[in-house]
Length: 105
Image (cartoon, rainbow, N blue to C red; front, side, top):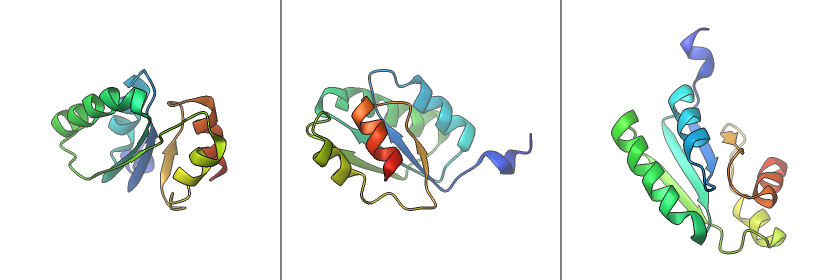
């Protein structure tokens, strides 16, 4: 597979309790920037993932959005309002409500 076919400019990640799928997506897609959507419960996982991506991938352009209540559909929907069309959304992490509303955004 041609490396150019698996890259993206902006990668948006939903952070759940398992950071491995997000890390593998970052390795494969080689984004120029990564934006994390996380909850207070997954903040530690997000911080570890961010540090690992910095050191292993050499990436330093990050953004982050904390979703205070991942069970509240309106709050989750609001958090995903700023996803640009050209971004790649990797929605395997986070809660089911986060994944559903991120996908709709």
